[in-house]
Length: 353
Image: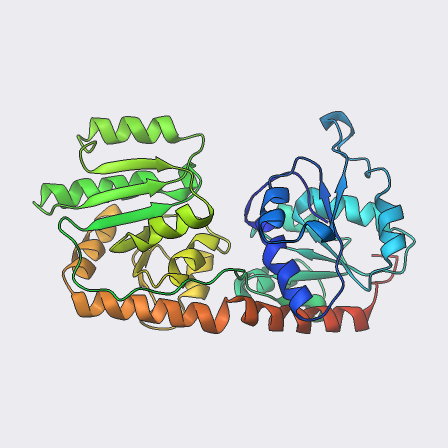
């Protein structure tokens, strides 16, 4: 069950569904009509598994969807996964008095937000730090499962030779202050001040776009920094494949699907040490991490990696290998199967929770 949005949590329903079908499970996807994830599901051939629910006006958003309980009872699942906050809330209301365990896919490290999932029978954490945070607020450890995010797609990594001249550095994400694109712009400006020519392309869109455009113009960077708009599907892959270096300046990533997208094409990566980055890049040599929020350190790392072909190639190879081993569809299916098998055996929590 998922709701209207199209953030990382909602997008993860696609690889989850494909992994479960690959494992031989029958699935039903309950999705609110008009949700952005509907198109993604169709692109992956999952339309036969989708049941669309009518959206509710905001005034009535805390009421369960009509027919939701009927759909669940008719399908008779062994377990239900609630994606995102509203998807979980509606599933929880629909399952009351039914003997079907409800597990939720957690997408936040904010304790007030995590506490809203107190009625779940189990929790899927995407990093060890998230699992520890869930335990710290009193959720039973035996019902918290580590299932790192994973992607449905793979890409053939390309060999990395010397970077083009000028090198092309790129980033991608939703345009909000916490994504840190203003810091990447400052880092590129620092490089240009040193006489180092670099092209920078930032894919995405969002509420801070005008702010970023003003910053680029004010710093005289319009000649070398481009905001290329929102990309998905094959356009996103082509964009990433066309980079000499991928830089994530994000200040807050509970996980970060964008890391996985860059890894699967074998892009060399520089990042700040967010919660997601600390976990995904925990093995040495998979990515270069620099002090959080420091544009000077970001500029230094970009200069260092672009000037060392062996280091850049090693980062790209190690990133792709780490993706295949831990964040591919095959790896995700194994983690998900273990979690759901245990959850089904545990059944529902006592009603006094």
